[in-house]
Amino acid sequence: MKFAIVNGLLWRQGRLEPLGLALFQGRILAIGSMPVGFAPDAVLDARGAIVLPGFMDLHTHLEDRIGSFDLADSCRSGTEIAVRNGITTLFNFVTQQPPESLDEAHARARRKAAGNLWCDYGLHLTPTRFLPADWEIILEKARCGFRTFKFYTTYRQAGLFCSYEELETIFQRLAAAGAGCLVHAEDEETLCTAGSAELDFFRPPTHARMRPPEAEIEAIGRILPIARRIGIRLHFVHVSTREGAQRIRAARQDAPVTCETGPQYLFLDESWLHRADGHRWLCSPPLRSAENRASLAEAARQECFDLLATDHCAFRRQDKDGASADIRTVPNGIAGIGALPHLAAQLLGWPNPGAIPSLVRMLSENPARVSGLWPRKGTIAVGSDADLVLVGTRKPEASIRSSLSDCHETYPGFPAVLDIRAVILRGTPVMLEGQLIKEAAPRGILCQRP
Picture 1 (tube, rainbow, N blue to C red):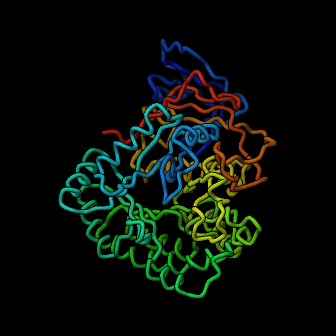
Picture 2 (picture 1 turned 90 degrees about the vertical axis):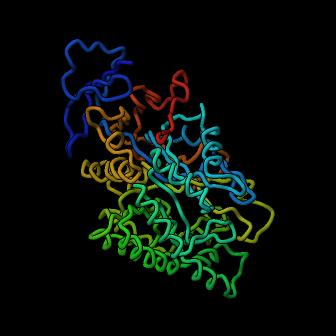
Picture 3 (picture 1 turned 135 degrees about the horizontal axis):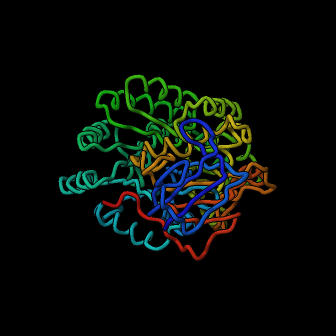
């Protein structure tokens, strides 16, 4: 399809310019004047809009089962709420379950995604078994283009735990294969000590006592020297403490490490757990103190974090509000995909144009770099995927909707500050003037297909 965008303000090379775009076969063919002989099949007038590279959410959990609960969002509903809010690529996790191989886990994820993706879709792989035959599969996946593998320093009972010694071996082998790692960093020993104290398991704030800040800070402090020694590309997910983020930032001087935080740690705090319905905000890591929230938000504005991502892990209302009042039986996770661009923009000072550079870096460019998709995605450049979001300059009167599924809203009453006028996925409009183009059908692809 030949497509043209005219009359918009295009974010390119660090500034807004009144330039047009010619799109062909899913890629950006030309920027500025139309190529000679280029006859578009359709033209989109972007007057009054800013044209940005499509947003990305590097950290979501969709169409999976965690413990005894099914997640509320499917691949279809999760990717639909994404494109409705300008997100053109999101990443999900594939966790190897006993007794399957990592190949079988990957095939399972592909079957779920097939024909159900409104946006493009990447996969982080989580191996849980490391016998010689398993390593053959892991390294083959790395050779076939999978750039990100995720590991945990907690969740021993769920079969996900890796010791620091095991992580060192994993880092060495994956670094040699050219792959990078994502790490959920909470020190298991610290968590066990906190959990052994006398606690009231019928009060949601207890969850924050069970997973204290010290667990994250300790794990980050233990992992960074390993990463520095090996030189692996390492990304810390959902960093929730200022000290943890500062340690990672300092380590960037001599190690290829990056980190993310989620909007829940920038806009919510432990006071939400003290509500009568506080169990609905249980997530891991937990919401922390108001003081930590304020300092973390300031750190985010200073780009102490490379990117923002949601850790979207929505559960149905009936599962969150289950019969038992014991917080240990409440599924951990909250919704966030639909909130991400709006909260990021609000944090950075939208509608001030000065918010645009950080917004693009944290929601487009850096996620693409960390995932290995740069410069195919995350930028507006000739040859890159034509993934674009057109943002209006007026302030809409609407509230955030984090998910389309039957789950509790994580940010009730928070404003949707961005006016998402249109979303283009690989050169084809999928949303115009706030309306999903049903005729376009789910046309997202798996980005890491070999």
